[in-house]
Length: 179
Image (tube, rainbow, N blue to C red; front, top):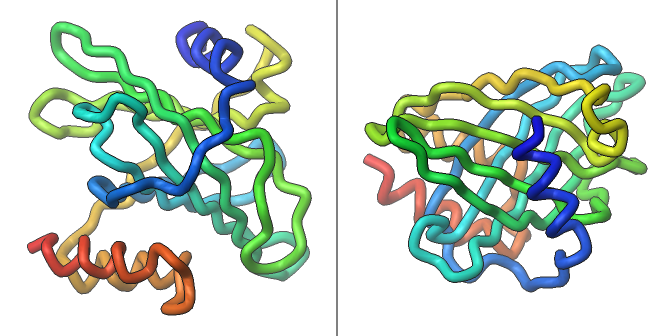
């Protein structure tokens, strides 16, 4: 939690940036929030490890009062290499925009750890409100959604993006190269 808090408080005011320049990574995760709702996210980023300014965009889908909602926010990304793994920090922009349904969504922040062989180790989520609580803030456990093949990836992407979205073509190109 301290790593996530330190990174986010240092960078929270530096979130003015454009869309990602090239889709290099797509990941999907799900969690249950403090409100008991189930959330699913797609995290899209440029080449995190080889970029001088790793950037990303997140879309989060959830159901509130029987209505499916999707929000989007930009992310700044940091990482820390350790002996056996690498820890990624995805810090959400200050505001989220509603893509589907009307929402006053507070952007999320993610701390995700992978082994160097690509195996998922752990992940946690906290929105900006939880982070302001300091050590008393609650983290939600992230569960990865594993992708079976290119068709499965396309189906997952379509849950968040439509053909009219500016990133859709790049996401489908990524899916075509997946197998």
